[in-house]
Image (cartoon, rainbow, N blue to C red; front, side):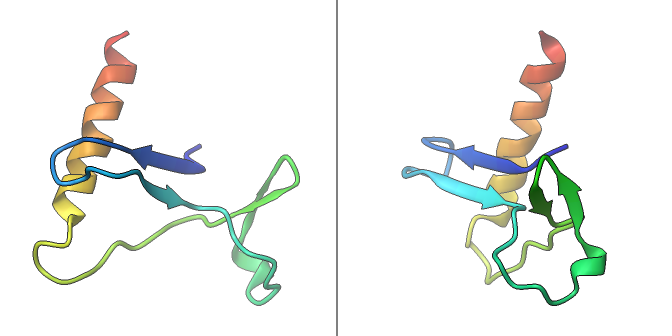
Amino acid sequence: MLIQFSVTNFLFFRDEVILSLSTNKDNSHKENLLFYKNERILPSVAIYGVNAAGKSNLHKAMSAAIRMICWI
């Protein structure tokens, strides 16, 4: 289960960028959240933005991480 993904110094990303699926303390839509070790997790996430904002590079970073994990 992916709870947080961070990338640094990969393609477009020079500084650290964090994609977190943890929620804040807001209790709205509580029935749609997943619970794992006392932490509330979003079941899905949408990444959107203007052109050249880094969406594809984030996808490439996540794909590279998956390839490295599966290769070992």
